[in-house]
Length: 281
Image (cartoon, rainbow, N blue to C red; front, side, top):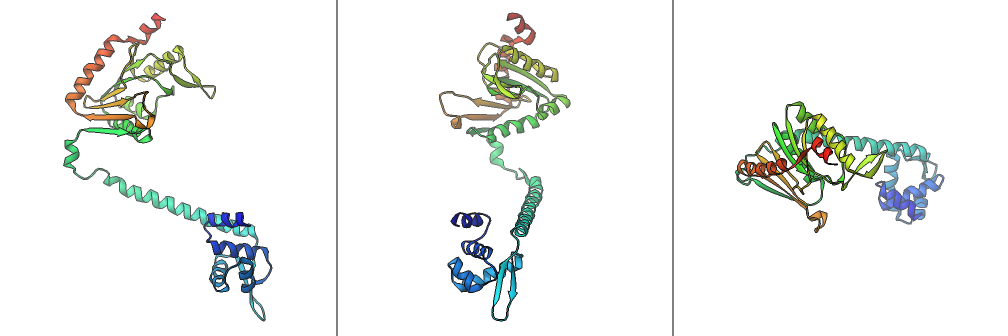
């Protein structure tokens, strides 16, 4: 019984409502006094609950010569009623959510904040989706060119994401230096499998087919991206600290971006094209 009461409370019933519901469910044509005794609550607390159940269509109210009695309707009917109510409530909440954020979106970053114009360095800590969303935001805003240095880690997809495809479609250029490593996994036959050098080459060749210009480096490269020679995104990846303590730095400064392009050019000039690298194997 206690488990059923607890489950009813999870569905939104109060403690007393759950006990009354269970009492009426078990009985046949019960009076309020009988229901109160079975539910082990005061009779004065039962009447409002029973009236509520009658209004919701959970039970029938039957007038007899001496006293009003109550009986539960078919539980399958009640199930349909509660499911319908939950679906209507959920749909209303989703509709309100969508409408609210549709109205909120035009107000995003509309306030002229002088302090944010002065501060051009942003530090993002933690191993979470917020850091990834910041990078995607910068990628979506890029117009002309992106200079990209990275080493593959964890799970790598062979597909180019839609944001990058749109960037290429609009005439954007991406110049990338990938560190030669096999410390990542790719999907083969629906299973994530440790990559090898052939996998690294195949992935890079596929990226080049989409329009990326790629070189491969045997040197350890910094995880850094330069957007339109104006903004630099740097991932501080330290294996000696926990993931949640990792950090990214965003610097919005043209002079700094040009300095980092000099670093990029240094790695670029020491790296090999895919074809040149294949000849070394």
